[in-house]
Length: 209
Image (cartoon, rainbow, N blue to C red; front, side, top):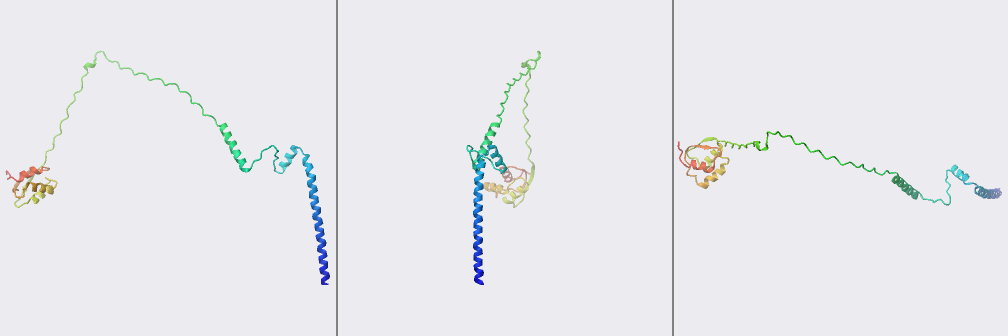
């Protein structure tokens, strides 16, 4: 029973394969016949019929004399055409209107001079000399030198009284004149801002009062 079933299956497969091969052959012949039939049909169509058929299939009919472009070439061509169209349509700048020469300004009229006046009779203004500013008087200060006061003490008291601005500078000037032992005790009338030479000359002499 097993061998019989095997032979039956092999025979059935061979039959099915033969049938499929026959069907494939018939289909191929039918396709070749249909293509042969369409060629003479399209050959007999007019240009308008071909364009209509191409339009229905969303295609464009191109003649043998038409120039074909790639996508990049087509984009470049469109750019050149658009630039040329812009150059042609661009309006040339209008020429500026010639401005007429401006009129020369009129000469101002001279004021009418009266017959009685003459340029020689015009009195010249007199320049007054500025008055010299009054020099401010220096404030007098009563300064007292006590017994035993050294040059440094006297210089410090002079700075405190506002007579000198720098005590050290006065000490330096006093040492240069060697007045350490020449300072006289007494009361002196000094002025604020008075020179070192004048102060030294006064305090090294006996006061008048």
